[in-house]
Image 1 (cartoon, one colour):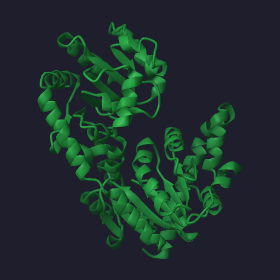
Image 2: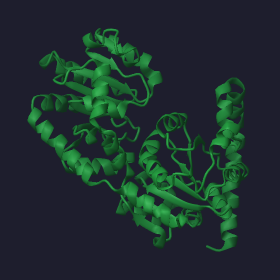
Image 3: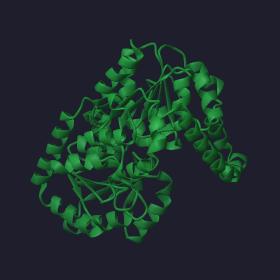
Image 4: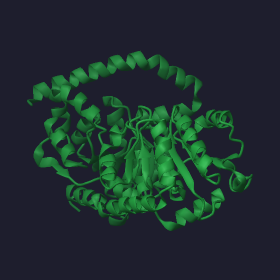
Length: 438
């Protein structure tokens, strides 16, 4: 694509961005005025960073890694950890796009020099952020393709790399319609490390230079495997007041409309196994009060919030409502069987590799668009099972409750297959080292 055509494409993009920004300005202003905690977030998104944040971000080489939300932060953690080992004096900067992602980055990514919010993709904010942070290399996770940022980072001398890249069915359909534009955007990437062959083929169809595209696997396999260590299981068991022989259904990352199905399935389990336990972990913990009403509406009296454990009747509870942040991957270690939410409703699924790393069979609904590769992988070895509705969820729970040997064999098969897939983090690390030339 010629320079004139590229200029015209970006001019159109920024015009549309301006129109959208003007429409959203009243909402932005209201939040800025009436929600004080949003001011710090918005300031960073405009390229203004607190002095204490900038003072911490010293060292060489200067590497900026962007992970938009919770899942991406978890996926890039092994890469951040390995980068710190290879470059002990580096400035490792991590940005996120969401508050939940930011919270997890600050709590988990202790190897990072600093964490902050990614700037809005308007040229002035992007240029201000890049000139303040001066990255030598910018690594963007999955499919966060921000046109102005990638172009300006390239102009300012940074190497750009896409790591753990995937192109979902929905994204591919959307990107293909504007291929003429994304060809120019993808030209700003020096390397594109994709999860699957299909992802590589798709991004080449979108306009990426095939020479820059490689297939290196999914860092989430490494992330899931790294968290499944026995000490975490013992920690969670002590908090929850559980015995090794207790049989527990864990429903993780559930959304509105899914807890009803989970509770119905659990009550059917209790009819055959009065000692069955349930750990229910909503995706958004601010929904905990609404879930409490569901528990009471189903006649469940013996329940307790995780935030009140250990203690306060934990050993007498039949249901634990997990209303704290950042522990779900450890909680899966307690499961006899797992249901992973965001899948019976149209939320595109959640990370089913985390329970699989503990050797657990995972049930999930049909909405798995964002985790299609994980679904195909686990279902292929019998450790991931798609159910269509709440009735099938209950039936599968009952079946596996009564067939513990098969449940264990399937779970172990999934764990062994997952461990065999490790290595994506190391391959992405070597790609970054090559781009940095050191």
